[in-house]
Length: 48
Image (cartoon, rainbow, N blue to C red; front, top):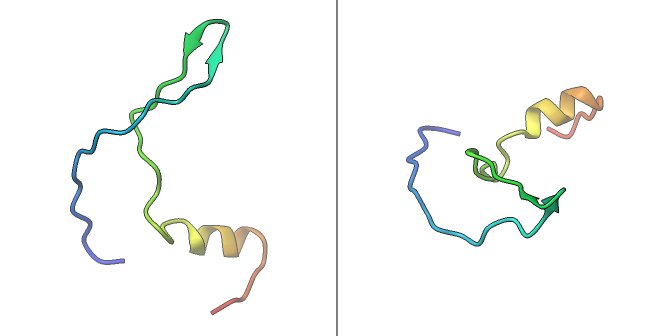
C-alpha cells in the first residue's frame, strides 16, 4: 500500500458505555484495504 502519512483528525467519540465507562481506543480505523490479505488468507479466499 505504499507509505502512509498519518494525520491526526478529530472525530466524534464512541457512544457506547460499559458499566458507565466510556470506551476509548488509541487506534483509529484501518485504512481501506489494510487487512484484505490477512482476511483472504484466513478464510481461504483467492480473489486476486
